[in-house]
Amino acid sequence: MADWHAPQGPFDIPEVPDYIPRRLKPYLFIFFVLIVQFSGGVYLAAASDMVGTSALMQEDILMAGYASLIGLSINFAVMFRIKFRFSLRTQLLVSGAVLIAANVICAYTTSVPLLVITCFIAGWFRMQATLACNSTIQLWLTPVRDMAIFFCYVYIIVDSVIQLSGIATIYTAFFSQWEYMHWIMMGFLSLMMLMVLILVKPIRGPMFIPLLGIDWIGGILWTGFMMCFTFIAVYGNYFDWWDAFEIRGAAIIGLACLGINLWRASFLHHPYICFQAMKNKNVIRATAVYLVFFTLIATEHVFEHSYAANILGFDETNLIDLNWYVFVGIVVGCGFTYFTFALRKWRYKTMTAIAFALAIVYLAYFYFFIDYGVEKEMLFIPLFSRGASSVIISIVFLTSIVQSGLSFQVFPQALTINGFTGAVMGATLGPAIIGELLRHTMAKNVALLGTKITHSNPDVIFSSFGQLYGMVQRQALVVSMKEIYGWLLIVALASLLVILLSYSSVRPFAIFPKWSKIRRIIRHVVRMDEEYQKEHP
Image (cartoon, rainbow, N blue to C red; front, side, top):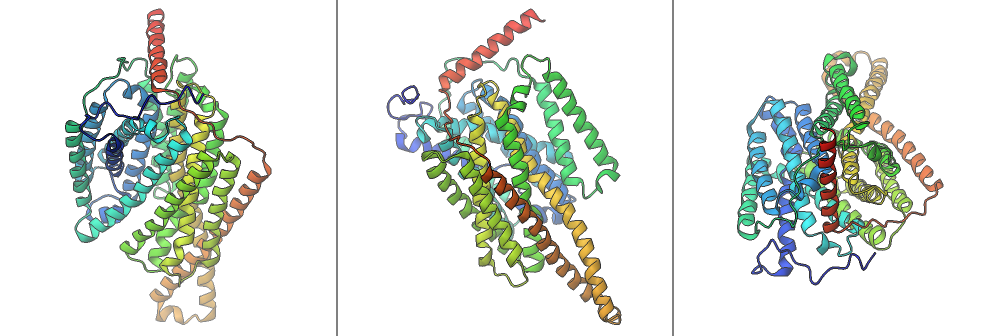
């Protein structure tokens, strides 16, 4: 196997002219990836500024941000087909132009449907441009095509940019206006397109593979299901869940899209996502772990901002500085995973247990130390642990899908499922559950604390009602958060116990096939589709 993947001479990128030093060529594409990853549509860190200067609500901006993740996820199933249909130069130029247009629209539109559609399209092209760059330098990163090593690189780029873009957005808004962040990224995207025009040659692959046999209707239906799921999770609390027509309608449409897709997958020759990908044990296991793990750390989206802003009194710049702690955790987590999981081949069970142990540190720290007098530096340990744990889980289970035994025709479909469950469901379902739990716990604790104050001194209510009400709300928030952290900590400890008691000797051995073999596989699939259509017109 190692000989089969042995590189042929020193690594080189034929699309880049020879007057560029060979050692600098990969860094050119890393620069492109960073620009593309920074340009994802709306910047969620600027949500409060966008709410204050437009007619948009917080939920509208979140929906647009998650639509970008849906566009990214839905692209996985066809990204290799597009890669072998268009040249690297064409993919980067078109993606850059689309992302520039998306930044213009996101900076000035107040139409929610337009904003959501724009972010979805931006997510699609951001994923395609990222694949185009990363696949170009894959052999430079890992000559034997070990995907455990490759995913360490992918996640240190992707997850780090999420933190750094938030920091850049807030400081841009602090010194000027939040819209300027979009203009800055439009400038970088224009620079990228200029560099592509000058430095990347229009070389087409050895075989022209048309976009034939792709189930575009299935892709649209899967997009509809994911959008409806996200809409329910984001707007559920705003519309009071199932009492609202909007939520019931989204549920019906989402279930209809899912049902039609499952029905079509039972007879289509090449559905957008086939049953083989859905029933794969590694995909199912990854989905289950994602749902549990990201629900445990969903307090990131629900508690941390409220606690730091309302209880500790942090302003926006101090709030966003906390991203540096998460950033350090991501870098250390990727480095740790690289040396242990990718190089030393530690078991999946060991890495999963370490990730859950770090999540336990995150929950336990807040449970035991949450108070009114916490300094910003004291938050380093829990935020560092959260960043490291999330990136370890993501790398480990994405690698497990590559090692799941799926054929290459089905493997990209499994990536779509992984992207939706890991990125979209992980970011929406957990916060929706924790947010609803916080609302009920807050109501209970406000009633209990209010009753105690009233019984202790009834006359105080009429003298300083507003001050007392604010004090009760803050105290109830702290008590409610501590209570929920406690319950999540118990679930995390139980999950870790289940992992430790389970048996698994599987170690990572996820080797990616050669691009020439992938090209032959896709060509064979297209040829089979052509013959199938001739036999079944």
